[in-house]
Amino acid sequence: MSIRAALCFLAISLLAGCAGYDAAGRVPVDAQLVDVERTMGIPSIRWREADGGETLVYPFGPMGYHTFFVRGDAQGRFVSRENVLTMKHFARIQAGMTQEDVVRTIGPPVQPWTIYFKARDELVWEWRYCDDWNEPARFNVLFDGTSLRVRSTLSATERSRAVFGGGGMRMWCGH
Image (cartoon, rainbow, N blue to C red):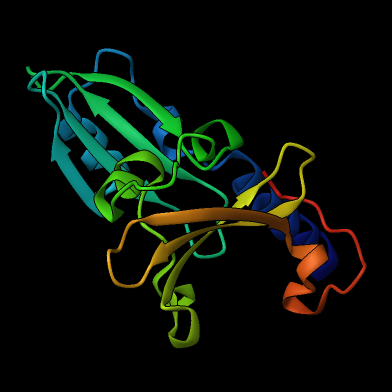
């Protein structure tokens, strides 16, 4: 095989791997949560639900666009998985919510992008996601620095913020 053919094959393989990665999608419907952990790894967070079930949280950041919530029932059976970094889930974030409420709605923020603004007594958490128009965007939750309750939220494309030197150039998510 020529070097050129090998490089073409490698490039196609890498693109196919990136385009198709969704480890949660390879979990059989009749799987147990232990099977999910075997496939996806140890979750970053897990908690028990009121019905005895469990939620496992898999953030694919900071540069990824997804945080999967994998849910299991009280018997440890896989029930569902869902990407929670969507406008539908962001709309659930309301003023007065606690930090725990936010994490249980959209998962943990990207820690290096968490910042405290002393002059405003405000703590800001940030997530990267793919917006409804397939553009990379950022979602922020602004907390009162004293009460640590949500004040407000903010969403903007990376293009509008000139993140990563993109300036006015439109970028697209690589689902």
